[in-house]
Length: 119
Ligand SMILES: Cc1cc2nc3c(=O)[nH]c(=O)nc-3n(C[C@H](O)[C@H](O)[C@H](O)COP(=O)(O)O)c2cc1C
Image (tube, rainbow, N blue to C red; front, side):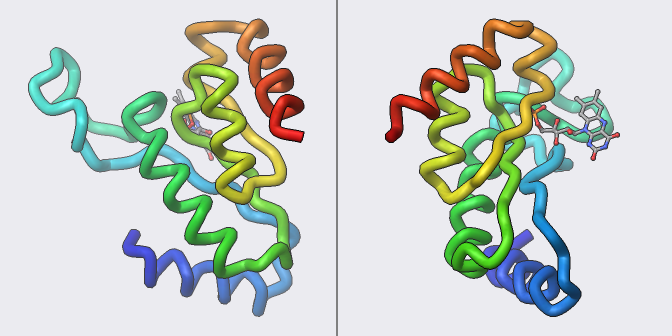
C-alpha cells in the first residue's frame, strides 16, 4: 500500500468506529530476498525482511490517527530493540510471530526490557 492508501485506511478505521488496528501482516513483496534459496516461493513473507516496511506503515498510521485508536505493531521483531522501534514509531503494543519461532520466550523478556528502557 502507498502512504496515501494507508492514510485512507486510517480514516476508514475512525469513521467506522474500530477499536484498534494491527499493522502489519506478511507481504507479497520479495524485495530484500532476491536470489535467496526460498526467496521466490509463493505466500506471505514475514520476519526480518518486512521490519522496516512495517515500521514505516506504523509511522504513517500514527501520524494519521493522532492517538485516536491504538496501533498494535507486527512485522520483523527479532530482537528487543525492534520492539522498542515499533513503540517509538507510534505503536501501543507489539505482536511477535516469526521471531518467537526462532528465539522463543527469551525474546519477550528482551522486548519488555527494551521497551521499558525507552521511559
Ligand atoms: C506461519 C504463519 C501463519 C500466520 N497466520 C496468520 C493468520 O492466521 N492470521 C493473521 O492475521 N496473520 C497471520 N500471520 C501473520 C502474523 O500474524 C504477522 O502479522 C506476520 O508474520 C508479521 O510478523 P512477524 O514478522 O513477527 O512474523 C501468520 C504468519 C506466519 C509466519
